[in-house]
Image (cartoon, rainbow, N blue to C red; front, side):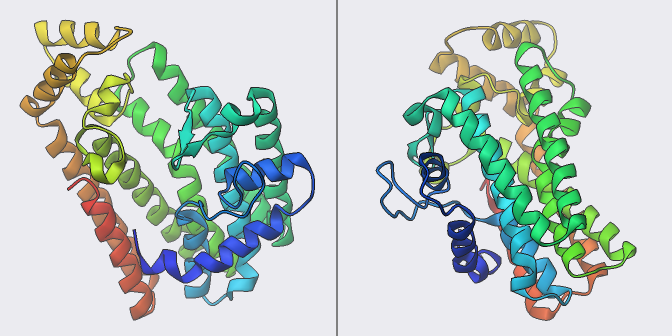
Length: 328
């Protein structure tokens, strides 16, 4: 993904992460590994993520009149919170790889991975405090929501959730940090209450669009693009947006077989094909795409109210177009 918002700030964010995670201890080296700055032996590496959230902090802040240096501590704090959550998520989900590399817990063990995540969170708060107590308050509130969302998501593993419950979960687990990205940019720039409300709407709508589109990719995404086979989320029994809708729309024998498949320890290719056929019959993919478009239209209305520069609006339009096209 080569978007202006991401490429503009990438080098600065990478340097900010190196500075925040500097230190000679083993645990600091583990954090640099997880962030993609080092390999397992502590040698320099370039395996970082997209930096979507910190890039949005810097973009919003500069569009509203702040400078990059002023906003960088908030951006780095948010990226570190995101990474802290991924270290712990990988443990809870038993994920063995992230961005094509072994996860922290598989290399150094679960206990040390928990320590690494805890330290990452502490460093994140320290970074945010450099930008002021208001920035730290926004970051801590978002962290609170994100952790609650992860707990809700884990709860869905043992029961079937409703669509309303799913939306409340993604508004926290995914949406909290995306909302924070927009809000932090406004706080750093000293935006008034009206602008901050608009930024909150923008972050909320983009957060929902981002996660629902990601869930669609987990079923119908191009394996060459998303790095996993078609129907992968069905095979692993993930309670994502398509699954939630499938359970709500399936009837009688369909519902009985669907429940049976999601209760199995091993799901076959035939099971996956049957579930995908059911989803096709009930227009699950089309409903998801329509929902994503609706949230992106809401985002565009919020952007109109912000009065971004022409270049800034072009950058945001590019991001929205990317989100709208991720499942094609």
